[in-house]
Image 1 (cartoon, rainbow, N blue to C red):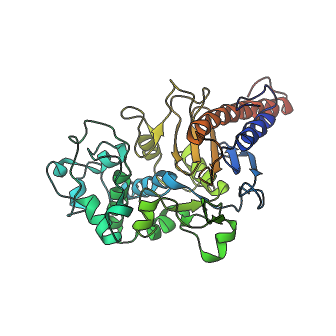
Image 2 (cartoon, rainbow, N blue to C red):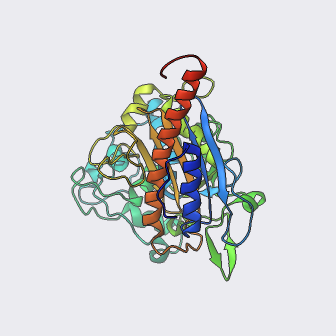
Image 3 (cartoon, rainbow, N blue to C red):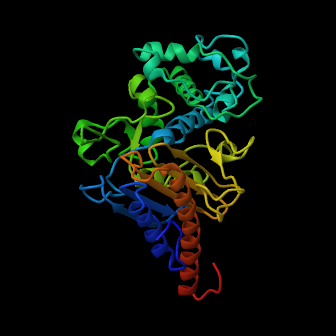
Length: 374
């Protein structure tokens, strides 16, 4: 069977879609968590931690290298908290917080430009080969010249997220991992989310590669994040499916925590997740309704999300009141020669199945109450 889904109960569709990815060699295993602002609709693990052995991944306990999901789970959300507290303004020049961020035109680059990926910086630098330590790597990014005028062109860039992480550190006088833990992860109940993996937890981290035939787990996959000491605004966070779901539910709930206390003001949730230019919001990607990749055909134009190179994703739709967290370790020796392309298609199919599951559950609840509609 290919990666398409059969017309069946949404839960059966989800199972078929994810299993097809395993059989097709896209990833050895995965977890899926689907829910609304106040209810979990589905949570399950599939396949194995590696291609040959290991337990089935669990949405409760299997730790995944989130890769670029770090940009929204930690960095963007931390920035939003600082804006909510009045400690950061989106129009502030980046150089106000990072004096070393210097060069022609850089005085015009704002915090908003970093979050929108419109700073004028290139997409990537191989810091792991260009520099020898974290100090050199940071200096290399700070002094990198602009390629375009600020605000003119959208170029999705790891450098923007690195700089945004350092802005957070400058404002808080704290390291990004410490502030994210205290101001984001702990309030949201994301108790298993952190930069890196503790030694005693490495046995439950999904492997991210092979070394001489042995799985490597519990280290950061992104080599630039590793060069920066494992804590960076663009990558480095590990988490479990249910923790990422807690973040998604907070965004769907317009900034309310599970106990109804405010996390951030509702208008900030809207501001950070509303399309500004192209398919970008502030930190987040906005649904490209011209393509079914990643977010499918049924998510609304208001849907927002993000993906990670290791095979992770989260998509959130406030119109349909549904989210889907899909975590895989695609980088674990994929057997599909175009695993990223295949994964995008699978994500889209799962997003559609999530909307169908949401609608099906709503109908069943309505019928149980003797109502004709949700």
